[in-house]
Length: 486
Ligand SMILES: [Zn+2]
Image 1 (cartoon, rainbow, N blue to C red):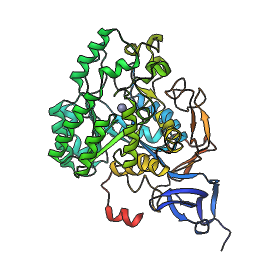
Image 2: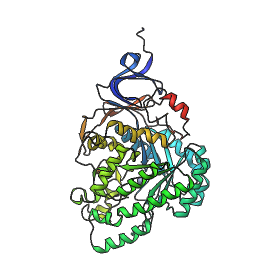
Image 3: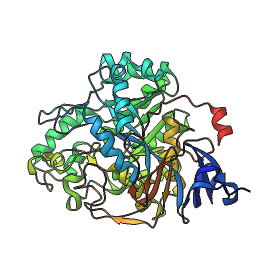
Image 4: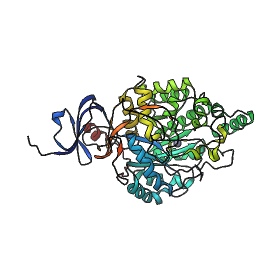
């Protein structure tokens, strides 16, 4: 045995979460890929030796639900804002163990004409790998679906809930009515795997009516927002969208599922063999509509926060495999975006904006704190819903989402006992002045993150560089290759 290093990086003495189980062992990296997994002796000496010291070693997380380039003040997508967000938001991501981001892309522009520009900005500024979900809302969008899929952009978002904001401000997102949804689903089905239809399912016209009713009632607490967007509005559209997708054979992904009934409908469709995935988000697992006193309008989000019964159903659905993915609707709204013109936070839900920052950075710690440490879910569940399932659905598996020989060396070292209190020193994104988890002690803060073999986070400090990130195209999974692979 020679003393000369044979590989680039070795991570030793970790609890590796792999498809064949969780075990204490080591992982070797050559170049950008995982080259060895096994016992300490099975991993050769490396130029760089990292001692995981018994902490978990996980595949890098994939954030499926970010909104880079979205501005509250403009009320619309500002294409140039992507350049800033690629850098500021993905720096936060590596502190949360997120190594790939899929961001919504909303624009009047022809996506195919601007894709190279967007990829160029990401590869110049992003710390992590990335892809996008173009929003489908107008005729011009529809026509581009085949070409986008060809280029590796394979997941398409439908805002099947949008209505005009009562204050007259455009939400800056393209509404997708029933006919547009149907035609888009047709185009996605025709494009074939891994093309995927993502849907925000809520009934906009009913919400519009209920909002007027709530505002007229004089109530302005957090629950008034939920009364205007009750479980019914989600359930109605989930049912309809499931039927359309089943009829057309379109693979379907519901973003932020929040209700007991939606979980039950998705579960029934999955049992019948329908290709349907469901995402939820941490806020729906940790907060309810009844927390006006604790969080006020900081809890304002679309869909609205729900109730204890929904929360319990969502935790169970993660364990049961019904909820397939976790995302966090990452935005970069600071306090001036959230509470415009210094608007009060309490008893003023209609005066504040919807949305929350910090998701990519607190996703893993919140799941460890509220899920793993309480015994609601396991670390294996976290890997499944934050990495493996997401990679499969987005056409990134087995390159991403799994610790396996040959996969990209996107790796996170996380000790479930390592903790931090959420204050203005917690976040590394642009927004550091507030978060839904303000004051919480969060456990499971990653110490080390690697993106394609490069250490980008070391002892909790950013050591990576903007521009390390690469566009990762979605491709149909070669099942045979994927199986020999893992
Ligand atoms: Zn969103």
